[in-house]
Image 1: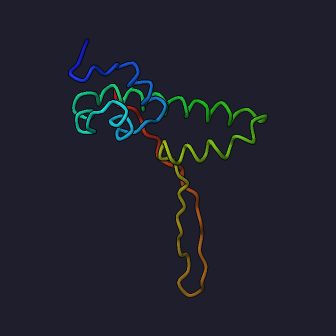
Image 2: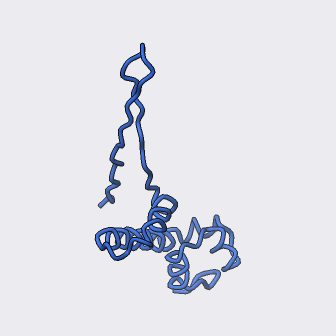
Length: 115
């Protein structure tokens, strides 16, 4: 289906899959970010979601294969930047008379996709 700006939806989705931002996509296609958000949000979101799923798959694949220890740091970095993953700590004061504390690592909440 042709559109006002003759944007190839497959190219748009592939660029979003590669991590292109709305600003980058708008610049590439010579349209405004607002126009993309209004008219092509579903396609862009589908591309962004697909790369996030792929990254999670790769994290799990490499995490379970001990031969890939050199790639672990990059996957941790990408998980934090692209997927919002983080390490959470909680500091609890156990005794106010003495300067002591306890540090616990808290499992992050798993985001479930809406059906």
